[in-house]
Image 1 (spheres, chains in turn cyan, blue):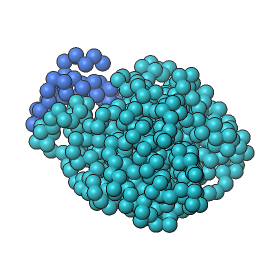
Image 2 (image 1 turned 90 degrees about the horizontal axis):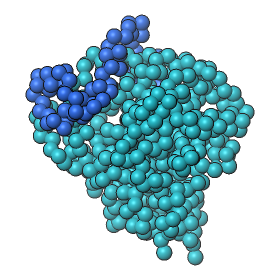
Image 3 (image 1 turned 180 degrees about the vertical axis):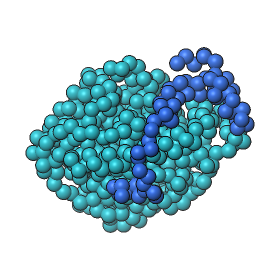
Length: 459
Length: 65
């Protein structure tokens, strides 16, 4: 008899192989996943809605695709045929309605089974995930800590091994921050490569869908479904790794610096590559630029009367920030677009010298849920103030980026290393991530949070 | 930034001009956000970016033209 719990603990590729090999069926694996949700989710609040009958229909009708019978969750940012996305809010935002979104179709056609909708930070407005209309999702490594945002539920669900893969969305680091905080792998694809149909911010130039998985091979598999094309494995031999100077590498928690430096050295050694310092002109403007562009793309749907109608069902911080966005000078937003142009050029120049850029995904491990503040060499900062300075570049320029597990802090909290590559080189990021996993013996992708161990397994 | 500081006139005048209402709690949050972001925004506004050549209709899936 198959140990379904052991199958659920496998990475995404292992689960797919178990189903394809007849060790278990899509229906059995789904039921085991739903039992695991019942057991672990009360501590995590990662999954905010399940629909067992719909999921069983998907399992029963799963085509013979690369993810046949594998349970996954999808962020509350994408419509499903039976459910409009709520965006972590009390109700679907303007323009949201049930339907076959691009990510839904990609999952269905690959044979995956959507087992639930994952939590997210209300209106996608924070890197912390500490607020949602459903209640905050929690970090599986310490449930009093932020899971990261805005894809808080996908990060928490994968980190807590409710599932081995989830679909998130990344507008200003929103896949990579939760991946780093929760000790999993998250890919922010090149803009335009992954499925986006059905997203309610139709004019976005920053948001992409992407995979959050326990390992890089899972991101390759789930990413291939979202991209609609196989992300072929290649060779990262001779990888040229670029480091930059500035706040993204220097104003960082020393433990994070040490873990990321060690991982970069392991990656260099594993690939027989090189490390050199490069300059990305204007990098210090990337965080602000991404915030100005990314947070104003939805303003066309906001009118003063709509803002005045916001009640306490919307979180205080979001009520205030939505109103504040109306006051941002148009000249600043236009200048942010000019910064985007400058950064695209300077990034392209950097990628003539190196294959990937590397720096910490976030400057400090997950902060407390009730006070999301981090201590850096420059002092105390809100996580939202400092996270975009390393996470915004990929969204502003359109280039791909990945966060990979790089260690644990002395407080037993995950540390993430971010790698960025040139446009269209998403596959190289996965190759590099897999090379790093091999180099460290998959130490950080195999280490599970105590919560996932202590809560035990379903009968 | 102390959330109890009186709201920056920029906020009060801007909201009033737009006809957007805000209660004291919202103003306190906006005040903190303004104190956090405005110095960087003001710095951006004063930067000379005239040397950055335009990239008309950028294709964000590809390198710049």
